[in-house]
Length: 184
Length: 102
Image (cartoon, rainbow over all chains, first blue to last red; front, top):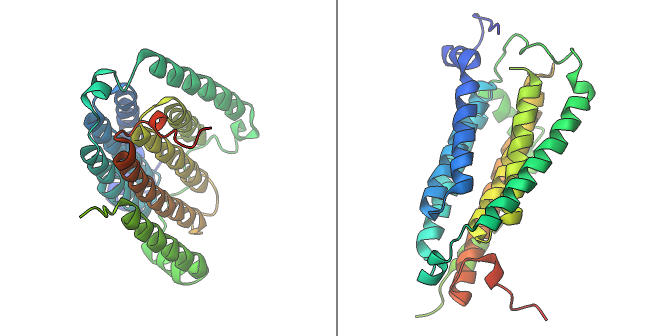
């Protein structure tokens, strides 16, 4: 793996040489723990770890802005929302005892996952992407600057950016109305 | 890392997400599975971008950014729905919301 020493931040160089394996291993471990976790709170913390390692993987792909957005949004907001929802909706004792995760559930999920991974893997292996045009490592790294993303957001992508802002506002107002408790 | 590495990883991530969303009873974990599916799509976007010759073009990161924002709003709405459902049925199990069945 050859990183051009002239371009890219030093952090990026370290990550590009060593960085994608460690987050991948972390991601797989977190997902494995998440899939078999019986405790809901532990599952939420493990999915936060999975999102964090995915952010590190984005970092190793050279998309720093995306990586920090991923960590801020997923680890900071989505996983914490999941934790709050779990704490606000305590399952009854009976449901706790009757195993949120029974053997059949685990087996079904496992079978679906394995079969789907196998099918998708066959497609990837058979695709022309396996040709050697893509076999080499990254081209000389020129990390996309934050400035370029900002200019695109107020330039070409301004309309979709505004539409996204409207969508987010509507979704948050809707969420607040839905979760509002009208009992006195 | 070659492109295939990321493609296999995101295929695995997608499959785990589908498996969780289809097999789990708890609505919160179903939502987590859907988030994993969207994250797998994002990983694919960035991997293809990184291995293309359009590294100066911010389209792929922008698309991934939009996916993150939409996934966040979907999660916020979904979790609010789950809290609302919990008030009605006293459970977050997806099987307990069966009042519309004939």
